[in-house]
Length: 154
Image (tube, rainbow, N blue to C red; front, side, top):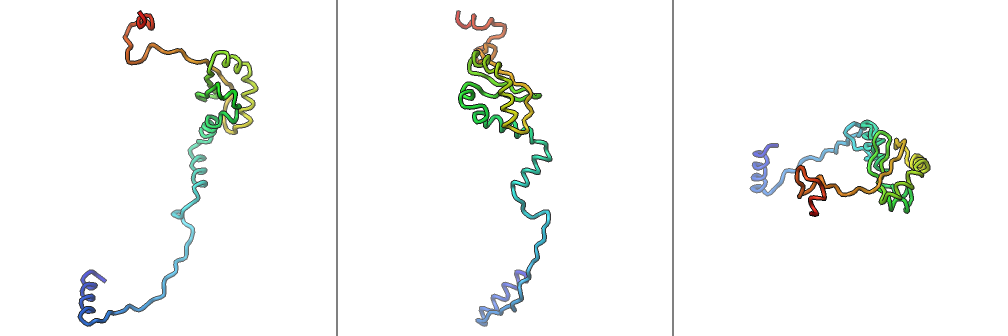
């Protein structure tokens, strides 16, 4: 029924004060079959995406960084921060040089703990570095050819 037909029918019903009722037909019941457009559970979709893209090791590394305190322990985690994993080498920054030295001596035990508690992480060695001194090579007040802090402090 087009727009004109509807308007025309309404006008007639207004004049005659009777509304033409349509015959009721039985509703058509659709039978659902599983198709590719049906919604899926988000867990299944994410699992398929992770497997297709090969993100398992990246997610495992992220899990290591997020749960660092639980894996290593509260005392060591307070003095360390994991920085990166590259080609099987986990780089960890320690709060001081003595902490870095002590943890380097314990790296075999810590490596076993990491490999046991985080599946999928490819860590073969751990490198501990101490805190970094300030760099005078970058910043707002750097000068090319300057001799570092000697120029800054007179």
